[in-house]
Image (tube, rainbow, N blue to C red; front, top):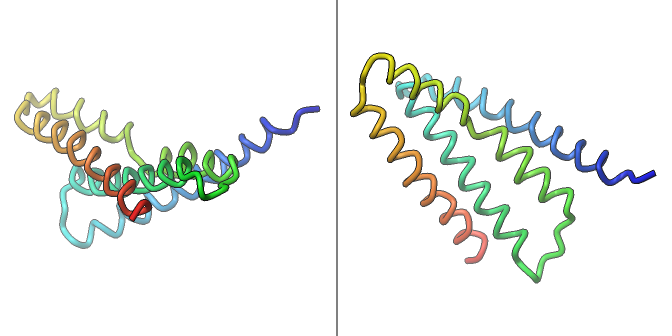
Length: 128
């Protein structure tokens, strides 16, 4: 019996549980600093992007022997669950119904551009 798929499933599940709970905590905490929901989601997605970049950098670092399960836990489980792609798409859909195309453009541009910068920051921080 090959136990590897069960270990990978457990790693992804554990990371997802931790990431989703942290996302909930961060979004409810950001309510107190008076950011719009779209900006709170952007901030959480940027945090997830930094974690993604750092995890990718650790995975590619030849000096560190990181177990595959930890990479799977952080890359797929934690960072994937922390990011809020479904909420991002839902916000875009709601704005499109209201025909707020300028807001849609700003959200898409800032999410993609700042997300790439955040991944680069995560890569740089670990390699520094």
